[in-house]
Length: 208
Image (cartoon, rainbow, N blue to C red):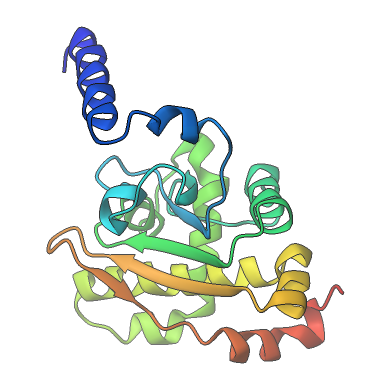
């Protein structure tokens, strides 16, 4: 795509928004009040606003390779802190997707340089669920299941944070695990049992 075309697209987008609402950008500039924090993958095929059918201002978005929430990632921790404690979001969504290159790379033994420590987090998920994953004969089905389990474990990592624990105690914030099926376009709710996970981990991870 030509760079000039992008700026042309921007002008067209502005015109379309103003045609519907002359005060659109004036209102947008007043601030944000999203109900959702969306944590997703940086994959260029997966955009939060499009797959959720929402508008600018509706969702606070954070993306990285394979939708990871390692506790040592200050960027992820800062996003959660700001979204939960300052924006007061009501829902946190961790959304993975099938055919994720990051998850696929973690399933293979290879030295990928700077990516190694990042992918190690996904390999740790594999280690935690090795018996289940190794029992799946189909490589593609095993790969998809690891995508799902990775989302589940990242939801656990979200729940471990003090901001989320406090928000759950004070206002019953919800955490959701989703998978986007690139092949069909469907969003799949993994139906993460927030209360059960919280109960299982609080003995060890209780902070507040």
